[in-house]
Image (cartoon, rainbow, N blue to C red; front, side, top):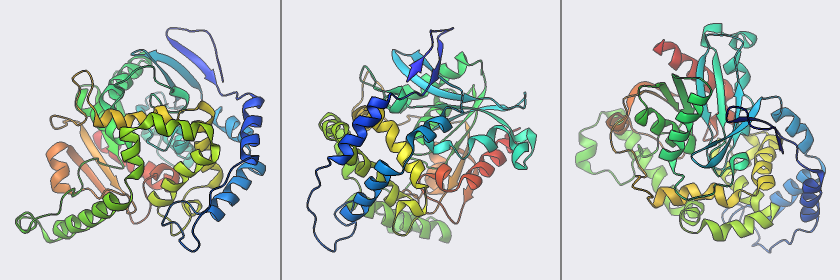
Amino acid sequence: MTTSPPADGIRPFRLDIPQRDLDDLYDRLDRTRWPDELPGVGWAYGVPGDYLRELVRYWRHTYDWRAAEARLNEWPQFTTTIDGTNVHFAHVRSPEPDATPLVVTHGWPGSIVEFLDVVGSLTDPAAYGGDPADAFHVVLPSIPGFGLSGPTPDTGWEAGRVADAWAELMSRLGYERFGAQGGDWGAAISRELGRAHPGRVIGVHLNLLPGAQAATEPTGEELAGLRVEERERTLTSWRRWSAWSREGTGYAVLQSTRPQTLAYALTDSPVGQLAWVVEKFREWTDSEELPEEAVDRDRLLTNVMLYWLTGTAGSSARIYYERAHTHDGRKAEPQEPSTAPTALALFPAELQIPLRHKADRTENIVRWTEFDRGGHFAAMEEPELLVEDVRAFFRQLR
């Protein structure tokens, strides 16, 4: 990875992973120490060995990092220092001079790799059969602690601090007014960006709304006050959240409490890092059995590579710890409703089913779109649906 000397605080960046790092990866994959497993249990205890062995063989012998590296380097990339930490970002300007600036934020266990299939149509809609008026100048930052923005040198990098860093980043790029889009942690950051900087944020487009699900079993009194459709949605939201709380929170509990302990395992073992990530792609996508049914296998591995090559398994997990522990007087959750116009794109395999009556308490919802396919990684699973909804939302704000 190389950078050029500073220029006005922003340094050009180009991915250039040393071959020795790739050779080290291949050596570790060849020497993997495999655990035993119970027969016939499928995914119930975690990632099955047969599946992971085959995926590792593919990673070792077929997957082409240099091709992925070249693809990422098609984007103009930069680094800058904000609030004492390194921030990596891609900045893809539209050929349309009046395009709307848009900062798009990934989540965990994602990266800017999530957006490889949406940037072209967002920046140059005319080339994809769209209206040039719907064009965006796209800024794709890596969250501090994640991948090329990691590791962070100090504590306290929760969603609010990241949102403030994004506001500063957009100022440095000359964008006084801009939109925001995100899912997962990107949703929490984008939402906070609109809440904390309403004079600058044109609108916030989310494909997940943290905290708007039924987190406790609804009472009869609560259900009685809802429309029939919202009543059924509330029950469904509670069932899904309850099931996830019982079976799907192990990763979050560990990352919220002991991210450093986890870091030793994932930073030393590429197969461990792969399993930690691929499990979530299997559980959170709109797939029947394997994550590759929803997300391209090479794209999934490129995402894992950004964690592995930068050694940021631990520093990326810290954002969970920061959410669970306040620092410097900051709060983990917004303290007042957002006034920024907000759109929510709902994909059916998403873990959290938001409720409109709860969303309206904390957000200024002006667009609510429900799709019949797709899951947590919307930009990778259903890029065309996501792009069209982003375009439609900002179109209605013009």
